[in-house]
Length: 308
Image 1: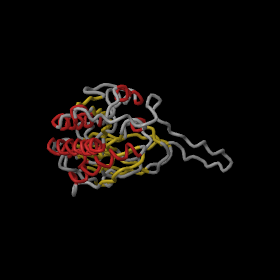
Image 2 (image 1 turned 90 degrees about the vertical axis):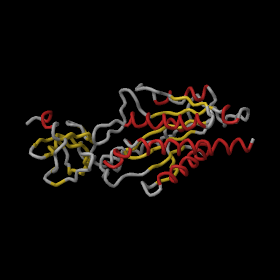
Image 3 (image 1 turned 180 degrees about the horizontal axis):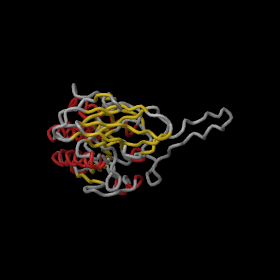
Image 4 (image 1 turned 120 degrees about the horizontal axis):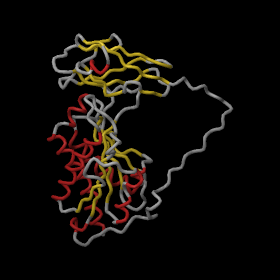
């Protein structure tokens, strides 16, 4: 039976058939089964099926071509994955120069002045729903793209911020492809008061998606860390008992490297985890997360107003 025909019984969202991976001895595999399928084996091992039909497992790999056998119900198929050769260490190879991450070229070197006039109504917040267009970002077990999950959360954040009186701009409000370094440009041209990029996470190929799930907020400098800390605290309060938080982490992302505007990147959840996918579909939870991010932004900016 061909892989296309077998898709009626099972889909594989990651890795794609024919995927080329760096050298690894294992990788995660996620997908979903069709209605009525109650048993699934991958590489001869039984795999749990979640109530949504999603599944996740780890598969063993070796260098070269790997064929992974998948049996869903009474349907059998296979998927091919190519693994690069193990790199041979060379003790005499020169050490690569340390990569230096510099600020966005169009950003000023110092924080922009805070706008006190008009209170929150005089403040502008830019939201950046990550990925978009041809860049899907991560995929959930059912193939739900991260770009859509990011946009839905961003719209909830916008709604909550507008209720508080802020002017909110979006780098995209549709399925558009955007250049990574161009995403914050308009925020800098407008001298925005905050810039927040919204994403959903995926583990490294050799990490188990069933055990890799948390929220985190990333920043590059103290200016961004203050904003990230306020958002992280509100998210922890909202998600307490749900998923763990890694708090504020350092990252050299293009969208966070601004000395001028408080900037951070929020990783809401892991879309690759079957339970993470299910939670991303929960509109009540999504609205609560959107409000938590908005409350964190509000906490940070109101604290700044008090200092003026």
